[in-house]
Image (tube, rainbow, N blue to C red):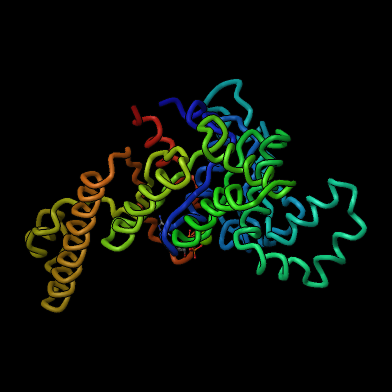
Amino acid sequence: MDVSRFCGASHVVVVVGKGGVGKTTVTAALARTAADAGLDVLVVALDDSGGLPALFGREEPFGYDEVLLDPGDPGRERSAEVPGRVPGRVRGRVLTPDAALVEYLADHGLGRVSRRLVQTGALEVVSTAIPGVREMLVLARLKQIERSGVAGLVVLDAPATGHAVTFLTSSGGLADAARGGPLRSQAEQVVEMLSDPARCQVLLVTAPEETPVNEVVETAYRLEDEVGVRLGPVVVNGCYPVLEGLSEDPSAAARSAGLPEPSGADRTRLAEAASFRSHRQLLQRHQVARLAAELPLPQIELPYVFSAALGADDLAPLSAALSAGIEALP
Ligand SMILES: Nc1ncnc2c1ncn2[C@@H]1O[C@H](COP(=O)(O)OP(=O)(O)OP(=O)(O)O)[C@@H](O)[C@H]1O
Ligand SMILES: [Mg+2]
């Protein structure tokens, strides 16, 4: 599938996965890919932006005000990849229930009271009384952002899966429970956005390991059944590139490479490292195959990047792998 068609298929992409599988990293890679395809991208994080700014070479975390992560300078070299295509900007911001409430009230002419209301903890009282209202406030704001067209693509770095299901189902519950008024209409509009594939889709992320794969399969079915949201491909993040020749004898490998005979200790270490790597590769391949068997969604594999802490240099290869995976989609 053409990358710009994929990135333009829905206005909002919600990135969902188990804690630590790489949601924030995949969010950044998707933002980079979509910006390279010419879209103006807004990344929305729910509490803090994690390592996302660092992946764009920025140090300052997101705030309620948008942070420019990438100006999308058309003079940059990567724009030469597709002549005439100008890379879009990437911006980022945090969206909390408090901020969403302040912005909602400000939009409704209550700007002066809104901050005080939030500071006095009124939202705590309301959200204790009405379960799901915090999540709904954030999604209602997201819906406004989506409708306003301030970005070509909004990528939401969602909370870890257990919370993500609650996060995405709570508006449906509220729409059913609320008798009427703004709460109900906001909740209904959120449900409308979530269930319209032209407006919203979920990108599931997993690691090629047993528990994350189990969780992503369960989450996929729950999101489909309980939210009715369109599921995009599953991103399998952190796949070891398969190395050949790991079973070769270290001495023989050294001879054929014209290197000196390794010492006994080195031979042992090399054999141990090779055995560890082939074992991991095998486990990962097994989990990828199991995922394919249990979840009928296309997969996109992103490589494990061997780097102490992922930074700006690591985003390009991840984004390239994501683009290649998108292009390989039917
Ligand atoms: N493909 C990769 N190769 C190597 N390291 C990676 C890769 N993807 C993510 N990481 C690293 O794994 C850690 C977790 O990644 P990330 O923060 O993206 O996950 P997350 O799902 O957003 O986590 P959380 O649930 O805590 O928000 C980070 O240190 C990140 O740099
Ligand atoms: Mg994260």
